[in-house]
Image (cartoon, rainbow, N blue to C red; front, side, top):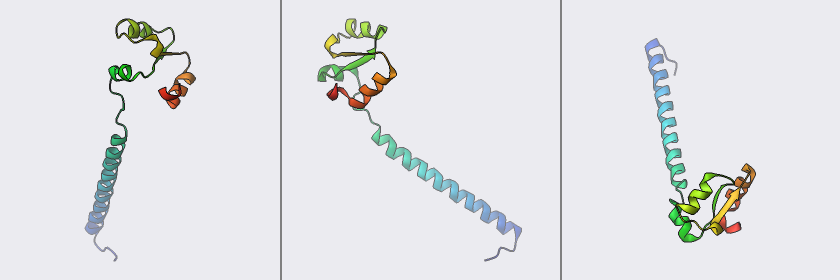
Length: 99
């Protein structure tokens, strides 16, 4: 139907924007809830890695290596030293099970 009054046109335009904003807000909230459920970490602390015998990676030449060995008593056999971002990426893709 054709809108005759300017006031009715303004009301319809405001109503359309309110509906659009509510729809977008609902979709963003739903997407956020679904994404957060999938992003739960499988490892929450270093004790889990030590107990399960998983590899722990750090940068070669970093102070982190000495801290892991001396303070946290991580066996050197569990440490993997990386020197480049490509090595880090490969390790993250492969995981501990594949070296």
